[in-house]
Image 1 (spheres, rainbow, N blue to C red):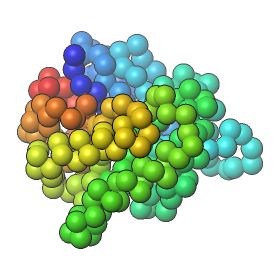
Image 2: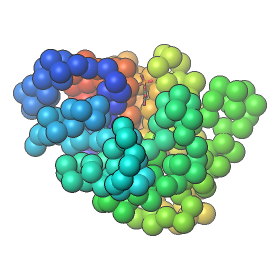
Image 3: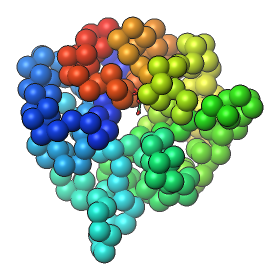
Length: 234
Ligand code: PEP
């Protein structure tokens, strides 16, 4: 079975580009991809050829929160997955581990599978704090929640959008550490995806790793033909 591929389109494509994107994926003959478009395109992008994932969500179901979109609303559109705690949410919008915990609870309550993104900064890595930082992020975000159906995405902050990437041994070992920690302290077996500068040349080696259950792709997924080529390399 193919491993998971999630395409995070961030705030990149406009209306016309999204139409071409959808058409390219639907005519490619492949299925099983998970696409994260901007909120505004979620309804338009509904398809029986791929699943949709939200890039974020707000933890309260409804109310006076101008500009926010709740997991409750996303569920009503039939959205199956949501990213939670993407590095850009943490670093640009200053969301905290405690925010992630509330979002995890809300997404699960609304039957949306959360994809919790965790990862160390360059400074953490240089100070040999990668495992410690990941453990803190996971412990707080997963505290007191019903852990039946979650996915973790390991995304080193320094690898996102930079072209830099850990070695395959480092990726495999960090994923193993995350899996062991989830099993030992929370008794769950979760898929762990890798994200950060995945491209056409490295996707084969990364997805061949035993402890990598799939990939989260940013920039390299903006071109649907490149995404299809990456899928075919797995
Ligand atoms: C991301 O933003 O989740 C990501 C992995 O980006 P990129 O592939 O561009 O590094």
